[in-house]
Each structure stands twice: as C-alpha cells, then as structure tokens.
Length: 405
Image 1 (cartoon, rainbow, N blue to C red):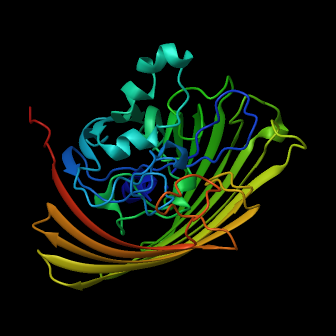
Image 2 (cartoon, rainbow, N blue to C red; image 1 turned 180 degrees about the horizontal axis):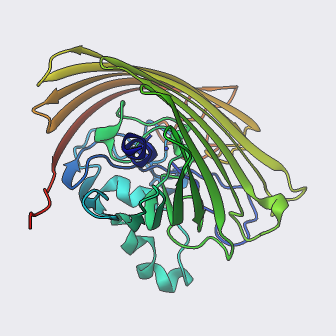
C-alpha cells in the first residue's frame, strides 16, 4: 500500500489548462496554458530557460520574434530563467500530516495564470494573479490509518502526462495536449484506497486550472489509478463542471483523460489520449466546441550511472474543433508534432538538454507566428516550424530527517 500511495502522490506530475472566459464574450477566444508539478520531498530550487507552452497567443507583444503558437513562449535568442522554484514538502511518514508550499518566479509563472479571472476587475488586480502567480503550490492534509487522504489548497492536477517542473519531464517542450488541460487545481481532494493496487481521488475544485472563481459553482474530477503490475500504471480522469457564467448542465465542460505508463530500469513508454467538449452558449446557435489529442513518448537510457545520457522521442497529434484551445479561423484544426530529446545528467543536480521539435498545422491556412504575422488570421502565418531547444536545469533537493526524541 505504501508503494501505491507514493505512486499516486507523484502521478499528478504525469498533466495544462484553459481558464474560464471572463464575463459574457461576444466572440470565441482560445484557451490554453501550461504549468507543472514536482517530485522529491523537501527543499528544492531550480531554474531554466527554454521556449515553453504557457502564454496565450493574444498575450504576445507585436514585433517580438516568436516561432511557436504554444502558450508560453519566451523571446528567442535571449537567455533568461524560465522558472525559479523553491519548495518545502512534508510527507505523512513520521506523522499523518502532510503539506507542500512552493514559491515560483519567471516567465512560466507569469504565463500560467495570465488569463486567470481577476476578482473585482481592474481595481482588484493586486489581489489576483499578478500577486498570487508566485505561489506554485500551497496545500495541506492528513492521511488516516485506513489509507484515506484528505487535502485542500492549490495542488498539482493529475491530468495528462507531464510536469510544470521541467526536471521531472522526459522532454524540454510539452505537448499540445498538455497545453489544453489543467496544470493545477484549487479545492478539496479525498483519496480512497481500493485494495492494494488501486485508488481513486475525488476532487471538488473552483475551476479549470484557475486560482480565482470562474463562477459560483464548483467543478469535479474523478481520478482513478490502477497498478496491475509493478511496472505498469493505468490512469483514468474524468472532469466536468461549468467554466463560464452559464451554469446549466448543457454548458458544462467535460474532459476525459486516459494514461498508460510502463517503466523499466533502462526504458519507459507513456501513451496518453484526451477528449474534451463544451457548448458555447454565448455564441449564436450555441455550437459545440471539441478537442482531442494523442501522444506516445518513449525514453531510454544510453549509458552512464553517475553521469547519465538518455534519449526520448515523442510523436503527437491534436484536433481543435472551432479553435477552442488554440484559436484561429479554421473550423477543424489538426496539429501534428514530433520531438527528439537528449538529456545529460551531471552529478544528480545539473541537467543539460538538447531537443529538436517539428510542428505542422494541417490545412490550407497557416498557424504559427512568423515575422509580422503575430495575430490569429494574419497574412503570412507559417504552416510548419522547426525548433532547436537548449535547456539548462539546476536542482538541489535534500531530505530533512525527523529529529529523534
């Protein structure tokens, strides 16, 4: 049971988000975002720079060089820390109590809550994401002797496969699919063990990856985790709830997220499939927007023990009907991508990463920003892009042994 609980606790690091739209919108606007999660217990700090999905397209400033439509890109040809994190976590080992607090700063932290609702409008902006974006995690809870866990606060979401903390990821860039699901969830979580090899998390949250309330009604998530074998993990997530001002059942957003992860000592493979839909009741005719994605990621150890060299490869596809996630005038947008990554781990504290990524938007119209074409529907948008990503990650994590009495 302890092994299963440990697996369940780390699985959220295997999931991006679309914040609820503000007010009554007269036109369809895309939603997307990114962010992540953590790993070892205790104190850690990390920083890095790379072109990451995390800032929505309409947030981009004119005439800045952008290659990608991913929501978190930073400026090219420039070095800056993408994310700096310091965190403390207590696991329920010596006592039943557990908590985690993480403070963060950097472009990725700015981006993940860029479209978060602001309580009180412009006059309340310093009580909104501009202030609270620096809190990456803030939750506490208790584990009972029966194995039941109860926690509340800002917690990593279990949706999709990935992490906001890049040191835990297999690749430098995240998938289009990860950019369409929540990175974090704010609310209550209850874990119920289902025997020695399975468990279910029940969530009651305020919105699809938002800190502020999107409306007056909560949303729910059911997270089922099954380990039929030591090396095999199956995850099934179902999310549902209102994400706009319309609280009717017909307007609820639904997300179905399925994950299969198989790990061995020298190689591992992850397969993920998502499907989401939402009725856009503020538009004429109340059309239904839908999106789906599929991803296969394979990584393997090449050589080394203390200093290690590893590789990873990942094909993916994303379907965005009515541009709900990534925008654009095309009714049915198909995005395909392929990623090849080399990781060099030095002294367990430094990670050097070199990654090549190819993205292509299928169809007649372009999709990626190029030159002066930096808005949806602009002339000159590119249909494909090649990206070469260099990443540097430094992380220091230490366990603090409990004092002896």
